[in-house]
Amino acid sequence: MKILILGLPGSGKSTQVEKLAEHLGVGTIKMSGLLRERALLSDDLALKLRDIMGKGELVPDEIVAEMIKTEAQKEKYQEGFVMEGYPRTVEQVQLFDPGFDKVIYLKIPVEVSKARLVARGREDDTAEVIETRLKVQMEDLEHILDSFKETLVEIDGTHGIDEVFNEVCAHLT
Ligand code: AP5
Image (cartoon, rainbow, N blue to C red; front, side):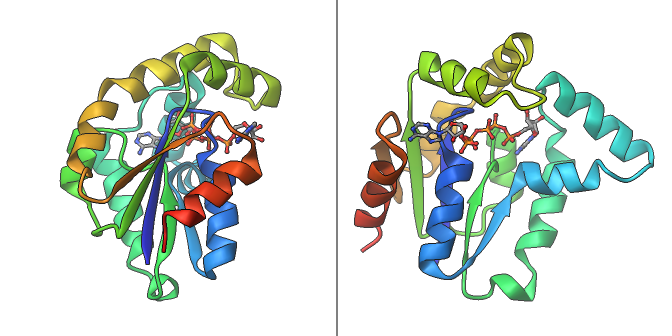
């Protein structure tokens, strides 16, 4: 089973991906995890990634598409996967779409997004960077949701973590 989790920053994508993958016994594919790992190297691309991600801007479509495609083709995901962080633009949908069985959209208001990120306090959870992340990620969101409308399920992401998880699971049967 191939599942995609979409949502604004702080909507709980990462949290739910982990829980769901464990529940289903499949692997997780997190775009930002792949990017952060790549950014640890000491070449020009790593420098570029650190700069872009540090500002909350989007990494160029071709770079992320190539990385996620390579990862998703690995043998370990033959039984499926739970993915998050890709796609974030309409262009990315066109560059790589593995054919998701279910697409889950965790819907939260912008205020909830900001409050959760500020409380978490990751390196890129500063007020300025949060504003940029929200702006760039909201730009194509409606179009992305529309392109997955056949398999899309919208869930209220403001509920508690376990409640959201139970609701996600209820839609997988
Ligand atoms: P990324 O790390 O994916 O950042 P993001 O989308 O802003 O998402 P977050 O990790 O902040 O939020 P989340 O929805 O995963 O929430 P989480 O579960 O952690 O991307 C970082 C950067 O990488 C981007 O800015 C960009 O530069 C680059 N990038 C990544 N993908 C890209 C792409 N495709 N194209 C181009 N560039 C790309 O939860 C957040 C907090 O809320 C936690 O503290 C959690 O405990 C809490 N929480 C979660 N659920 C609940 C709940 N139900 N109730 C209460 N609290 C909750």
